[in-house]
Image (cartoon, rainbow over the protein chains, first blue to last red):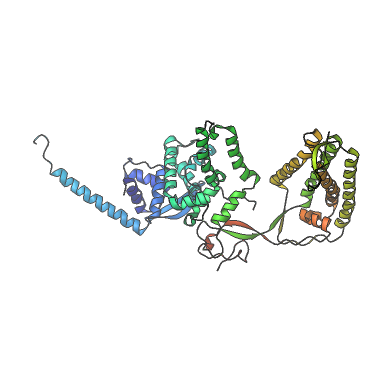
Length: 107
Length: 405
């Protein structure tokens, strides 16, 4: 799973969001590092819908703008939990690897 | 089969506070996406891009535009049909893409479809062109005539043939056939009223055509410098004579023949007049929809008349000897008076607004009451409720929204 895909799934974990909501949430989650473009976002959503991780939820029109909400499926939910566990394990191992390194200048 | 076969690919609703130029810019760049994707998601896409854009933006910024192009082509690649069935479809016109009807529908709706449809012919040009260039000729692709042919091939279908090739393709590849299961993207045949041109709209054209041809033929009879003449061939040979160029024009006789034809036409016209004035001509037509002549039909009439009139005009100018045009003149002379009279009568006849051209032709020439039209059918995308059902023959008994089962 790419970082972008993980962030999109994560943004939907909290509640269903529309396209602009996902872009904003991803920006916040990534600490302003990942700014999704429309083409990238819809590419990710299309593939996740095809993989059964995400599904379209409801539509509404606000200020003449059509907003379609997307939500996580159980499969998507399980995938984002598994990926979070994997990343947490990775971070743990990374910390212990860094803690075990020799102090600078004494090698 | 008159309505445009495919819905607009991208809704052109302008969100509040957004410049219409911005929406046009989005429409332009989102063409990278397949048509069916734009139809399903276009509204949402415009909304998102409007949200992301700076307030008052008049066009999409470069980064977003490139992102759209990349995303669009990635979508096209992801949803392309497998190579083998695609080749069979493209080269041999098989229905091998039954599982990719959405892709096939987009293919048929595409602007270049008439060209893609003749792909095998187009491919044949390449080896011919290569051989031609090897032999010292110039490449066909560098000639104006080749590209004019391409433009004609493209415009003929949609402008003059009313999308005939597209309709044929929908019928072949998308229409669920009897006994086949309707899948997402299938088209079905539904009952529709038969469309007929009103008599009042068609008769001026029907009258002008023979009158115009008659005038051209009279001019040819009066001005032609020479005519065909019969010449005996060798004795024993069949049929014993031949037609050769260069005879003197028997002007009096030719003009007399034309006058006789018109006289016969006048007799016919009086008969038509009596028949059209009989009471009770209107028949209830529940399965009919009357329409105007339309640009396409008018174009065909003008082209046909121009093609036919070319012969007497050529005869009048001496480019060909007077001969065949006389027969055309006889036909036009017999038809012109009844057509003009039918027009004049129908124009004033109360209740004739409900008559179609075919009715007037039948009443005038055959002398019988109009036929009651049976229903026609049109092709239309299957409703979601019909997906999964087995299609019956030839259409559902329940009309426009057939219930299946």
